[in-house]
Picture 1 (spheres, helix red, strand yellow):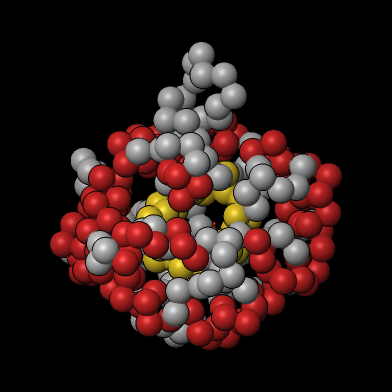
Picture 2 (cartoon, helix red, strand yellow; picture 1 turned 60 degrees about the vertical axis):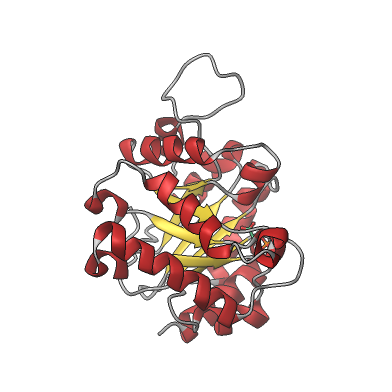
Length: 263
Ligand code: PGA
């Protein structure tokens, strides 16, 4: 599990981009542009099929405790007749230490429910993967004044039944749906407001001391130009980057900007 204590977390979600060949090349180039740094936690989430190759590429670098791999989605069963699916133990075997759960594309394109996110968070923890639970409202929900209701419902549902120490091992990403892939990022003020709501609810669930240590990342149209302002906002502990994580130079620039700006 990544040690995120007092360091910003910068995660790249490649979505359905980069097969094994491109993943290997990315890791090689990114390692040159973003040398080892003990003041940050970097996570790359390639497509499942490229995970093992990315692991080999990272291992070939010879010791990068700051660089971790994640999978973008898992099934909650460990194995079985689920054609096309990948389980948490398999992801771990292939090199993942992290998993994205409840990404908005999973929720809105593939119909993933809050109950499924709960099952996936539990399966990830059981297999020793660190979940990054993604929550966020649509533009219609924001305009209807439902931001708090939506994101706290998503948070509560995913963590239902878990004890405080277990919840404290998770990461959260606030990703407003209207900001993902649109070029329109949330303002640092909007991000701080939503992150504050999540932090307060975490405090109610697990106590303020443990809640203070749960990294809450912001995602949605992050780029090198806005990374510093977003990560400097209150309660923003890192970034989950989609499109701008596909180019090693751009992702390295985001990581540098975020590392320099993190309080
Ligand atoms: P984006 O995606 O950076 O391309 O907006 C973020 C995400 O979906 O995690």
